[in-house]
Image 1 (cartoon, rainbow, N blue to C red):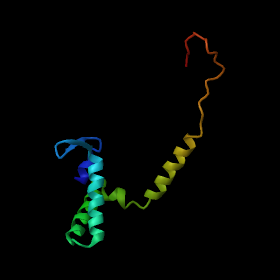
Image 2 (image 1 turned 90 degrees about the horizontal axis):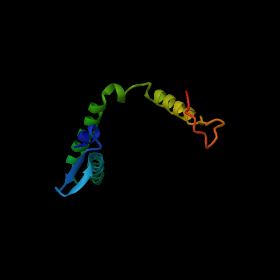
Image 3 (image 1 turned 135 degrees about the vertical axis):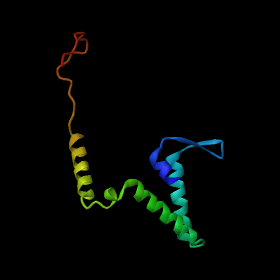
Length: 105
């Protein structure tokens, strides 16, 4: 269920054949409920389910993407580039509001 939510997060699933819910919310809810049951220590099988969710996520993302030593550095560079791009402001120039001439680029 969790991997289906990661593969197609925007697809709609009918919960109890009545309530439409997006797949990503069902996968988040499944992981959260399993984690809370794991913390309650009432059911030892929750650890197996939680381990399966983690293993499936790592298998889905690929071990190269999860355990990459340069992952933090590349994410930092992406964040820095995104921050620099947001500093630019687009100006229209000295356009008059009632100028009906076409704009050539």
